[in-house]
Length: 360
Image (cartoon, rainbow, N blue to C red; front, side, top):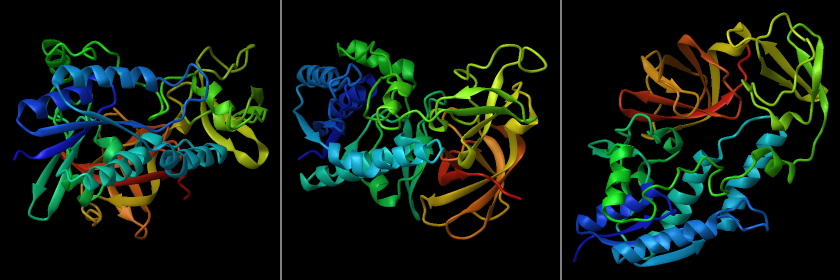
């Protein structure tokens, strides 16, 4: 009997081609569509459309499609944290937590109970077995590499996971989908919150965190505007500040550099080259190392502080088992507390942690 693999089919082109490739390689493939957000009556949730696309893909490929609802798990394990972080003035990355708690835990556990050997997803990443365990590697298509979002995984889920498109360029993925006649071949990539869908983010957040207006203060102490609530802004943000009326010494745009929570003040500076926007040193907490062991202190590594950012060379200095200081060779732009910093040794994703304000 051929090896049985269950593909998490999202209704997008990447997971569609993941299922296609495994099917062509002779695996016993079944697909599961995960519903992880209950429709709330708005135009913002595309789960019905995505399910229909997934169903069409499975009909063309002759594969069974199951549906499972992880909405409660998503709310408890991902969304509650997401809201708490925004309320605290931080900028979380729900996709990272979503992968750890839903795709590679709830979904993986569910699939293993069905007797499969592995699960597969449409991530642009690779996994490799070594004598010391499983490693997470960057995707071959550097413009689409998604290892950043997978850094919280450990050896167990990696040992039970496959990334069929990890060594393929995005353009080829679309070509394979088109050749197979899949309806997702030309479908645009999702840019929305993990599992919540495409939506106006500000309007969505307002449903859960009402406005709390306050002052926008320049780094020189001048009031230059008002904001609607600190949770609606992130470090490094330029658009949507509404600062005008001749404030500032030039026509350069304003950027968010800090949030003073106890005073409800949003601190801004002018110009994207302002030194207050850049950091040579950041602190990371909630550290997770895929191998189970931290890299050697002082070793030359690389890091990303946001998805699709170019690697920045750095060194790490552990503070304790849960936190470390990261020293960059060159300043990084707008390190936002709550976001993830992910570390690499060449192709290998080592793990990472959550960015915290650095205090001398």
